[in-house]
Image (cartoon, rainbow, N blue to C red; front, side, top):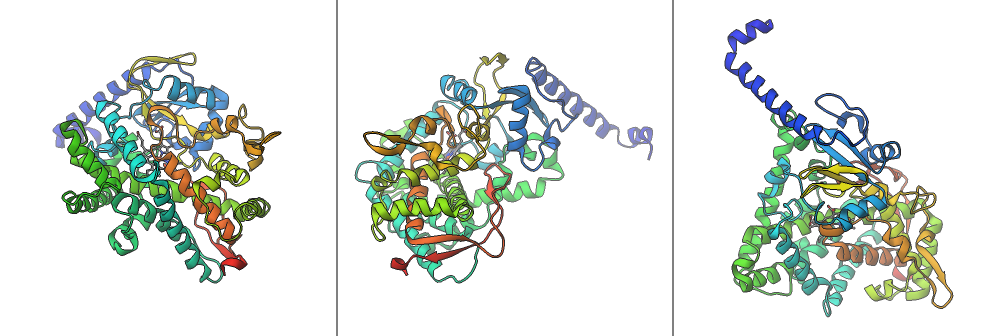
Length: 502
Ligand code: HEM
């Protein structure tokens, strides 16, 4: 059918399409024109730079920063976006101008997913600040504060020893992904709902948390549904709906937990503590949706990030056996073969800690943080950035900033160590401050201490009691799959138990 016939047969459809195109063009021109002074590579019409990112956008964005500087402009579909790179400029934005860069964009997926009750995707307002305050206080009172660390420690041991027991019976090569994910999910589940509650008795949670999580793709920083909204209507509709359904299922499970716990409150676990606090504070505090969603976020974000970090640690140890041996020697010399690692004893293992931090630096698993947005007009570097601009913080480039780290591509735990004439080997705090795998400032990861504690203690326990060897099947690759979390490609390892634990 020729175009003029189209106009005759579908006049109202044609009119609607023309008006929609004009509105989109108008919005796009208004948004882009304000950022014209900021440099950036040339993109394509409609998709902008999205098709130029390849399968490793973290590398593409970092390479562009070498050409265009630490503040440059791209366009992802309908959204113009400012990319901020390198330690100095990311720190300037997130910390020195913390309030200005603390907002989140109005992405469709953010709305579909939690209906405004999420902390991670919430606008930077009074409600978000209250949400962060109550959540931090719940973490302190139920997991990390005085008298609570021993309980958290016991949960980590329980899951770590279960993992080792499982692996000691595994012959040959195997994929450790599901076991590691379940161990981390098991710790968070007990922290959220009660220390004596086991995730393994709750099949729905095991299923939802250990199955590969498609939301990793869904909420990726270059997400097609958000950036090319018309794809929601066509190509991505099915997967988008599946992801939203999955998050709603998770919310429904947590709602059931909330309903069963709300009358019999035990403030020793995170959900109980938050229910109590909300009652005390009345209208000043979180509503029920926010409360339920906090545990959803802890279980989903907390499990994916910590388990992915531990999986990378396993991969790096399989790749670098000499570093594994050195860390294992430090652990055995300090703790012996049987002493379970505590948070305090981990602090006496500088080489092991430096190894974990080096793995976090090189993998920076949340490469662009969560998308940020400006709350007001501002200047960053030499450029004016208007209120409401979408900003991606390239945390991956921070970990590889040559001004902070010599030979940044090398795996070298020694970069985080210094030999102190009085105290011997200790962590180099200055170097540590210059990597930001948890972000920084007002939207910094709320689970940082818990995440580090889980990873460090489990890593120490593993190296104390077993040797990690590359599997014979799928050789572990150091190249990640891209998503909002950089996950390892499928891989196998084999485990050799050390004598005292056999
Ligand atoms: C090794 C583990 C982890 C890493 C590398 C990590 C990293 C991050 C990063 C980079 C952000 C985004 C910061 C930004 O947008 O500027 C973030 C946010 C967040 N993380 Fe984590 N995280 C980890 C563990 C956890 C754990 C264990 C929990 C909860 C139990 C958690 C809960 C959250 C929440 C709720 C946010 C959103 C905060 C906000 O928007 O205000 N994370 N995390």
